[in-house]
Structures are given as C-alpha cells and as structure tokens.
Image (cartoon, rainbow, N blue to C red):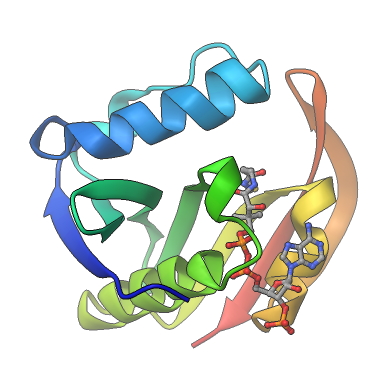
Amino acid sequence: MNSYWFLVEQGLDKLQDARAIRHSVFVEEQGFCNEFDEIDATAHHLVIYSGNTPMATGRVFQKADKQFTIGRVAVLKSYRGDGFGRIIMENLENQARVLGAETIVLSAQLHAKGFYEALGYQAQGEIYMDQHCPHITMEKSL
Ligand SMILES: CC(C)(COP(=O)(O)OP(=O)(O)OC[C@H]1O[C@@H](n2cnc3c(N)ncnc32)[C@H](O)[C@@H]1OP(=O)(O)O)[C@@H](O)C(=O)NCCC(=O)NCCS
C-alpha cells in the first residue's frame, strides 16, 4: 500500500473531493440517481489521499440513540483491493465511537456483503432493492 493521509469534515460542502469520488463511483460507474441527499449536510465525511490524489471516501451519521450509519463507502476503481476500504471503515467507526456510537447499522450493496463481513458486520433480514441494486442491512457492535 502507498502512504496515505486523510481528512474528515462535517458537511459535504467542505470536502468537494468526497463529492467527486461519489459521482465517479456511484453515478458514473454504478448508475445510481439521487446520489446526494439532505444527510450530506450534517454527516461526517472522510477522504483518503495519496499525495494530492483523492482515492476513497465514506460518511457517518447518527441514526438513533447510540446507533450510527456508515455509508457511501467508495474506493476509486484503480485503488481497490489494497486495503483502503478497510481504512475508511475503521476510521469512520472511530469517528462514530467518539460521537457516542455503540452500534453501526448500514445498507450494503449485496456484492459488497463479504467486504463488510470481513470487517465484523453481520447481515440482518431480507435482501431488498434500492433503485436497481439489491441491498442487505448489516450491523456491528462497536
Ligand atoms: C466495496 C469497496 C469499498 C471495497 O474497498 P477495497 O479497498 O477494495 O477493500 P479492501 O481492500 O479494504 O478489502 C478489505 C477486506 O474485504 C475483502 N473484500 C473487499 N471487497 C470484497 C467483496 N466485494 N466481496 C468480498 N470481500 C471483499 C478483502 O478481501 C479484504 O479482506 P481481508 O482483509 O480479509 O483480506 C470497493 O470495492 C468499492 O468502492 N466498490 C464500489 C463502491 C461500492 O460498491 N461500495 C459499497 C457500497 S455498499
């Protein structure tokens, strides 16, 4: 893995690189519409950089008492399989802990279920569709 550093900001407007990565991965690559939502204004967003190059992003926000959600986890295609997804998750989990989280609940694209399982998440309930893509709820106690 190359050396890296990261930024965390509250509010997507303060981290335009997160917006660009999400547009590239979720809109252009995966074909999602309505990628950006009202949660972006208050969520904490993380971007991982190699030098000046943004590589990966994700966001975390409070969903209920002591329960937080991590989402919009995306690594640019050419940087996948090199541990950056794990680094995003570990850092967003730490951010959630600082904010008082005891559990993380997330909505996983089905193809990424094994990624989240590798990080200690367990699937809950039935598979459901979000736009064109099958998803499953996953949860982890911190
Ligand atoms: C899913 C994604 C974030 C994974 O990022 P990554 O940097 O490639 O993952 P890492 O290299 O950190 O992998 C961490 C672990 O998960 C495993 N893993 C990664 N992707 C996996 C997958 N699709 N299925 C099963 N296991 C996977 C790795 O083998 C690794 O396991 P190990 O630590 O036991 O060796 C990345 O593929 C991505 O951005 N995909 C497109 C966007 C997307 O679909 N995001 C998920 C939205 S729910």
